[in-house]
Length: 102
Image 1 (cartoon, rainbow, N blue to C red):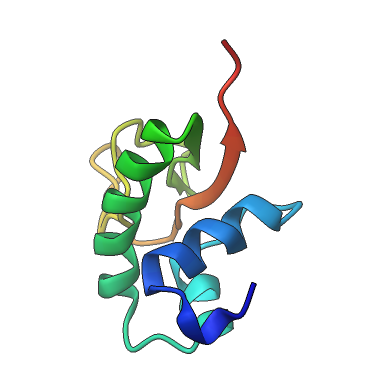
Image 2 (cartoon, rainbow, N blue to C red; image 1 turned 180 degrees about the horizontal axis):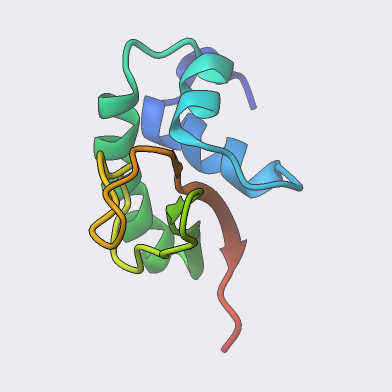
């Protein structure tokens, strides 16, 4: 497969499918030489939908506050502040793609 013929979303899909460890949006941006993390998060929303149609799923390790351990269970993006302690030290979400088990 020649990467210059793939769309950005296809590149993200294959990168996350082939990796052994979950990647952050920043890591995805750097590996694929994309313009911004914000763009990566937008692409990930669409990648999750197309992955589901293909029998895969986007596995998300949700953001966690490094200060108090609060886990954000519905955030695909990195929150700016912890609602529990107000800390801004938040580990970003990490992503993988795996085949769905039926």
